Image (cartoon, helix red, strand yellow):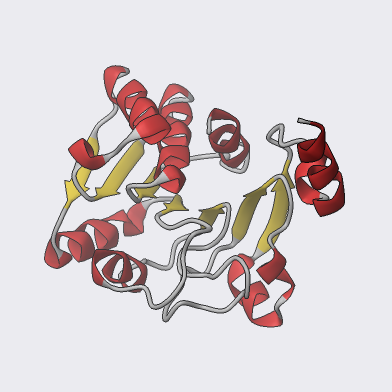
Length: 196
């Protein structure tokens, strides 16, 4: 997660930086970006869609590191608050989309949909893939963020080959975050597993 967030941060060259985080691992990557942006001296604003107490695992770890360093989080938990908080980021130089990750399937709804539909016309960097895009098919799950840059991890996702996905990806950066090459080779992976 730290490697992933660091890879995204490399695409940021000035502030103010707005980072919008969901409750999962994608949001955890966003908290890493927030920490690095703040330490670089950029005006850093974080919107968390959800309750900080519901964040678990590594995402919670990196959220708490950011907070202990003095970082502030604006937690929003209803549609009106989500829409207002996202629209208030329209004066940022860069927005980081750390809302939804590779597990997105079906129709996006609720607070996540409100966030996507409220997204201002600001240069946007997507974490791993634009929120609302299905990583396997490259189709939108009802709505999606249109990124200027997508920093994806390890390997391009299968769905990125879909011409429809390319309208949302913007410039694609495939970042090496230490995932072994064997993870992309089914035969090599099976051979490795049979040795265990």
